[in-house]
Every structure is written in C-alpha cells, then in structure tokens.
Length: 464
Length: 118
Image (cartoon, rainbow over all chains, first blue to last red):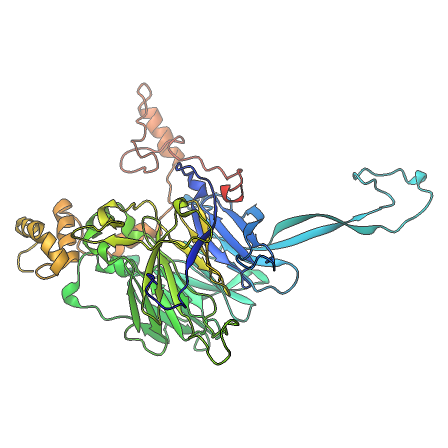
C-alpha cells in the first residue's frame, strides 16, 4: 500500500455510491448494517428505519473485462416496525442491528434480520412467470360466468417481468429481555444464536416458539453487574463452538458439548493490562465492539475503540497482532467522552476467503502468498486496511469527491501533532459525525462495501 | 501521579505539558492527561466508569415513562396553570417533570422507501 509496495498490492477504485446526496440526513436513513451473502452476488443493508435494501451484482459482461458487475437494487422491504411494550414502558426501535445470510439451498434466498428484540427469517424469491389461461377467470382476475364456458383449456405459465418478493417466514420473538447485539448462523445451517447484553440464546431455524439459553451472565444482584456481552459469533467450522466478547475487553470461547449452559468458558482471551497505564477511560476503550472469526477458524479478530487485534485461538493470554486504527484519538478522549463518540461501535471484517488462490495470469510455478487483510472504519469517513503479511496499512476516504471509476483512491493521512504537511488533515479538523461503523468485504473478490452515515459506497480492485 | 486529582495543580501542570506529553509521552501519558481534563470539568464523576450505574443506563435504553395517574393528578393540581412542558430535550423526561402524551415522541413506522433504493 501507500504506493511503495510490490505489484501485488490492491489498488482500490471507486465503483458506486448509493443513497441521497443531501447533507440533511433523516434518522431513518442511517445505515446500521451491511452484509454480503455467501456468493457475494447479493449485498444487503439495514437501516434505522427498519428497512432492508438488497443489491444484486450484475452478471459480468465477458467483453468488458475491466470492471466487475455493478450492484443494483434487487429488493427492498420493511423488516421491522417500531413497537411499544406497554407492560414494561419500553420503546422498541425498529433499527436493524444485524443481517446474516443463510447459504443458498434452492432458488430462493434467506436472511435473518434483527432489531433489539425480534429476529425474523426473510425469504426472498423471484417470480418471472405467471399462469395464464384460466377457465373460470379473466386475465384481469374477474370471474367468468361458468355458463358461458364452452370449451376447457389448460392454463400455461408465461414469462412476466421479474418480480422479487420478500416474505417473513419465521418470527423469533419474546426471547430477549435486553437488547440484541448479534446473531450468528451455525455451520450446521440449522441453528443460530442471538446475543443480548446479558444472555445468549440458541435457536433452530424451523422452531420459533422455543430457544435454549446457552449463556447467562446476569448477576443475582444487578448492583454487582460489571460487564455486558457486546458481540457473539459461531465458529465457522466447529458447530459446537462459539465466542462472545465483553465490555471489559475479554473474549470467551465456549463449547456447547461441555454443558447445556455455557456459563463457564472453555477459553478466556484477555490481554493483560499495564496497571500504570490505567485511566478512567481504560475500560471504556477496551470494550470490544465486534468479533469476527477468520475464514479458516484458526484466528479471530476483535475491534475495540482504538485498535484491531488478531487472536490465535491457541493462545489466550495476548493477541498475536495489534493494529492501531486511530491512536491519535488517545489524546482526545475527554472530548470524545463528552460527545459520546467514545461509545461508537465500530465493526471490522476480513478480506474474502483467505485461502490460497492461484492467479491465472502468473505462471503456474509462482503462487502469490495467501493474502490476509483486515478492514475497519474510523471518523471523517475514513476507513483503514491492514495487510497482515506486508504489515503495511492504508487509510482511504469514502467521499463523493473521489467519484471517478477506475481512478485509484488516494491514501489519506492524519497529522497527529506538529506541522501538518500538505494533503494531511489535522486531528482537530476531523469530522466526528462522519463515522464509518459498518464495512463488508465480498467473500470472493476484492470488492468492498463501506457505509457512511446514510450512503453506501462500493469500491473495487482496479483490474489489469 | 503523585498529586491527587481535583486539587487543580495537576490539571494546570498537564495543561502546560500536554503538547510535550503527546509528542514524547514522557511525564504524562495522553490518556491520563485526558482523564485529568475530564475530572476537572466534572469533579463529581464517579470513580468507576464501567460500574453498575453506567451499565444499568445502557441496559435501560428505550425506557419511557408515562403514567396516566400522575398525569391526571398533576393536571388536577394545576387546574388553572399551564402544565410545565418538557425542556429543550423532549426525549428526556426526568425529575419532577410529569410526562405528558406530547412529551413522548411519536413513533411512526417508515412508510417511505429507503433512499438507498432510489
């Protein structure tokens, strides 16, 4: 990255941007989650207004080899509505906290979407033909007088304009007292977990009236509450293993074979803290906002306020790698606490399948190293990528000013202190209202989706 | 960190040294300097930020209060006066203020299609 690398570095170019141009953002339009499906053909977003928008990648035009397919709107629907729980005097936001796709089993696509309290399984199906030639009905639906029917015919299916329909197939409700922060589909593709601040439940995708509680960290006396669950995820290969992170910066790995209630962890991942560095902010900035397993399942990545950490599942006492996202914010923590930004929950993601891939353009005797890159967002509409092999990192900006397709994005640099160079931006000039909390990486290609407050940017690798 | 916080002496010192600390990270780590700033502004800030109160507030997100009994009693008490209306932040109903139906924000579902699909 930063231009100094070998020919193998990814050169990111602007591809598309979705959403309104105007600065006056309606709260409902704030994007709250972004997720590619397993093939990468579909890209789903959820927003604060409870709506889901799904984009579909156009089929690649073989003659236009310089660009991959564009993403266009495929389906949009209202997933969740605002509710008011009268018994508890509790307002339930319709904001979509997470979307997770199921792997495709048949022609239809399925996804799970959740707000604070209710998870829904949505079926997205295509209809491109309809039956015509009924005996008792006219084409417009009016019924024919049976006495006028003199001959019989067999209705046939005729093509029609493609219609994409979304229908809720399952509603998983009433299982969470606290606010759901994560859902994760098991590698068995039959069960999934949902996690709130204090509990984690295990569901079967077919069964909505029951779920098993597998983690419960609620203390008997709420005065003794010291930490909450912030994220949870199933292991990608081991169907009995899952992890959950906490507001105190710890990650617990649990094995469901050990006991029905996994309150006792199998592994506890925690980096020892230097007591001399402890401050009022230490615990807040150590709170983990996201946890993601690597595709292989050997590693997991966590995001806390200032850094991204890579953990080897075989080593609990410290991460194997730590990447600073925006260390310059450490000397701004007071203001960030006052404006609540210190509580922003940034997500993180791995590049697409980190399995070795053969580049067909190179000779067969040379295989490029397995590329492993992690990405996360920051402020001022900046987002960061860290290449775990080269140890290089890059800061890019999601902005309409870099609108030219196939023009490589210019790296950004923040000047922490001292004399600001040309093209650098000083910490005090950063716009803390422009946060990139949600990013996603296509599972197979170098295509990324980056959500600003209300816009979705798609960037892709400049092809040869 | 010898000087106890809140004496004022430490904050003055860190104010001067802040530039140095950021660049050389010697005398005062930036995090501590920030902590001192915060405590200078809010002397009554509790010692444990991750403690029970803080987490309880997080767990109670979405809690709204409207009690029709309180509302009618307050109305009866102040027959001839205007009911006190909510302060600038209508969403936050606290203290002696009796919530009225107008104070609770209207929740309407989004009937408009997302602009991402536009």
